Each structure stands twice: as C-alpha cells, then as structure tokens.
Length: 420
Image (cartoon, rainbow, N blue to C red):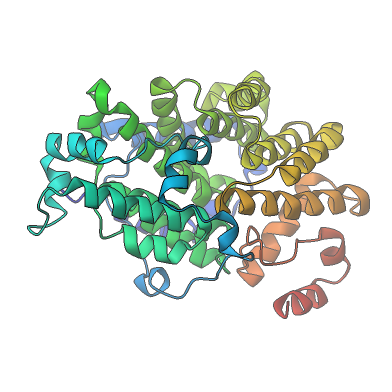
C-alpha cells in the first residue's frame, strides 16, 4: 500500500507558521481582504492534485508519546462490558452515533477479497479464517465499548484495517478526554490521521463503488474528527493557515453525500459553521468559508431528529449557541449541557461525552455568573492558561477551568491546578 507523504509537510508548516508574527497576530487586526485571500489559499491547497481534503504526507509524531502509558477511565469498565452474544444483540444501539456495520465474517470476506491490499496487510499467515478474524475484531470493539482503550488500540492495530477502526477510535477518544497535556492530545490525534493516510488510495477506490461507500464514509468521518480536534487547539489563524477548516469541510461533505442523515456528521457540520462565525462573523463566514448561520440550527435539529440521546451532539449544540449568540442564548445552552449530562450512556465513549458536558457546563456557568468580561475575553484567558500549563482542558479527570478564579490570581490558580 502506498504511503503518502503529505502530512509531514503539514506538520513542518505548522511548526513554521506558529513561530511567525502572523500566527501570533489576532485575526481582529486583519482586513477582510487579507482573511479572504488566506482562506482562498487554504481552499486551493486542499483541493489541488486530487487531494480532495486528504492529507498526502505523514506528520512526524513522537512515538514515545504514542507508545507511552495511558490513563484509565474514571469508572469501572464492567459497567459497559458486552460479551459476544450481547454485543451482537446491542450493536445497532452501541453504534448509533458512528453507524459502523457489524464486522461479520461475510462482511470482512467481501471487503478483503475485493481489495487485496487490505488482505495483504494481515500477512502470509492469514489463512482465510474470516470467522476467527471477525471474532478478534469484535473483541477489539468489546474492549473499546467498555473503556479499555489501550488494550483495544494494541489488539486491534494487529488486525488490519477493520481492526484498526476500533483501535484508532480508541486512541481518538483517549486523546480528547483522558490525555493529560495538549501536546499529548495533538500527537495522538496526528498519529491517528497518519494511520488513515495509509488507506487513502484504497478508500478512494471504495468511494467509487456503492457497495463499499459506507466503509469509505466511516474512515472519512474519523479523519474529520481527528483533524477537527487538532484544530480546537489552534488559534483561528493557525486553523486557516494549516488548512484545517477546509480539510474538515471536505470530509464532512463527503460523509453527508453518502449518508445525508448521519447524526454526527450533521452535528459536526453545524458546529464547524458556528466556529467559523464565532471567529470571523456571519457575513465573512458565509462569503469566505461558506458557513451559514441557518445551517447551525438546522443541522443540529436534523442530527437530533435522527438520534436525540447523544451527549456529544447536545454539548456541541450548547457550545454552538454560545459561539453564535454569546449571552443571548446562555440559558438554552445550559439546558443543552444539562440534557447531555442526563443521558444514560451505553458505552465508555458516551460516558466520557457526558462527563465532559458536565465539566464544560460548569465552565460556562462560572463565566456567565462570575466573570464580568466578554466571552472573547474568557476564551483568551482560557487559551493563555492552556499555553502556560499545556493542560488538556477536555480531560475529564481534571477539574473545570473556572475563569473567574483564574482572573483573580493567575499564579495561584496555576499552582493549585498543578497539584490537583
């Protein structure tokens, strides 16, 4: 399988741009013409040479971080353990957010026989025992659902593309909710994007055949998730200069073209539009990035019409309300956070989604009740804290970032936080 080299270039460019004056410059200081020119350059970068928003080179990743120890989930994994018979029975419920087909022996045979590169990576020792392969991949999913993320990553990574799906989904969820530092989070997510890069050629072939478009969509959306979470840790200008926005947009458009009712893809598209409007405003967001205010509400409404019990959709909706309307919709946002908190999770991933909703809701409540400055000031304080401490503020094992406390005495807050 051809190994593409595009993401290495992106990583190198990221190191360069983050050290430039332009990356440090606040986007408020840029003219509309400058922003539009930068956006057009980014759009062209992800559309040329048949890239279609895919990374074409690998990013260098610190493997000592990838292979280092992982924190456990902050609850007992037995709460979400599904033995084989129960896993089969509850598969539609467990995968209603990501819509992954059940990896039966027949399913795997059809794909590995059609795409020999996928079969070849299993090695010469694979003897076409698809029943056993299915059982091993399902065990990886069992580990993922119950929250044994490191075990799922290590087990599934040896089982080819369809074992790597739960393996690297485990790494994504761990990176976002359980990694201690921003550096660790970004390295783990970039490693996931690297792994998907290895399959770009075969994925493009899958896209051309209706029978396999669902497989294409799964990894396309996983790629979008990894890049979007990396973009969260960037400044607005870094997100544009590193082409994150258009790479995510291409991936989401691809996913929705195959499954227009995909709940997470609809929510991701709406959340992306809200983020763009948050940074550059409604008019420039629409003219430059194609972000539409109407699509924020409509996208979340469509997502919730498909699945109304996904905590991640409710908390992303809450965040988006704040981004586009600031204090005007604060009570609707807090209600959405509370809804996310109250949803009964059926897997470790969903439990972590709800736990983060609780943490983020407390941060927003503290901002609204106790912080007397603007939401943009709150975000700047938050970013300053992250840059000083390198803390991953999504980590549910850590206390929420309370901006009112931080603003009163930054040094003392950092000292206390470092010992929690």
